[in-house]
Image 1: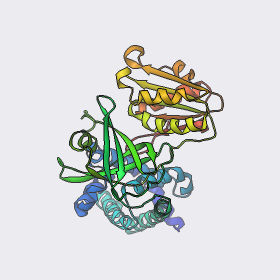
Image 2: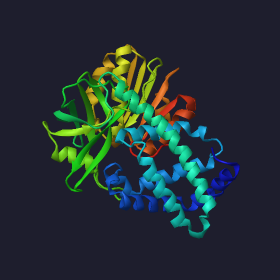
Image 3: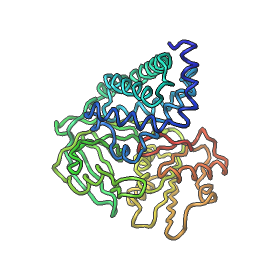
Image 4: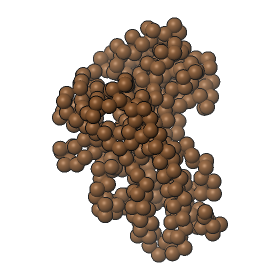
Length: 387
């Protein structure tokens, strides 16, 4: 429990975190990777190079400092981070390493301003947060281990099928090497896969939606990520496309994630690009229950409609289903009127795709009368999204 004095000291650092938070977290990550290089195989090195993890952590530290008197308001964000941590195998013992480097970074970046009292306050604050995270993550590890077909550490899976879905997307069917059962993924959840990236001479994990699962298999779809001005090429996605094939073995963590289907209410799926993958998993479950569904997908053209044939087949099974495919090559970007046309009474709205797309979709749906409580969104990659 933090003392009132410690709470005030943490709150007093908020202006510094607003101005220098990214500099602090950049220093922290560089320090930790030098001091504990084994963690490079846990943290996404692509996001490190692009500065995404640094910015994400800076935002999380700032939010924690701003809400230090009542951290319970951050519980949804904490659960989101906990799921990400469990997906890559972060364990309780890692928190001591992170805490040591974080406190040292505060001292080194702030200099004389980092008084012993301030460091003690942040040590107490970090310990409080670490205990909360460890508790949530321990529950996730335990439930995954005890589930029928479950596991809680990296498990070897063999690629038993690889199929080109579009020019940029391939699907992979994975079966456990041990021949055991596979715990079912909730519709919309994801797994982490871990493999050796030859160009980096390093093992790296990445998360991919479970598009389909059965008693003895999982299926994922992987988009090839080309280099752009603001991000490097996708190390794992490109390796999977170019270097891995049927018969190869990769490591897999059990399914996790909070972006899942509400199986009792009508659903409106709003996706763009590879954001379609959790929607297909949810649509498959919705079709089994014959829920009312509207599926609104944005793609460049018919050839880039990933899993389009499956979507059409599943929609045909619904007694009340409506498919809207918006092709930007012909129609331009969707407008508020386009989003309004997807509104369905009593529905939950599931959004997945690029961040700007989801923000625009949420804004259009709100203008059409959709309540915030009925909007759910999933951001691929690091960090969280406010829509």
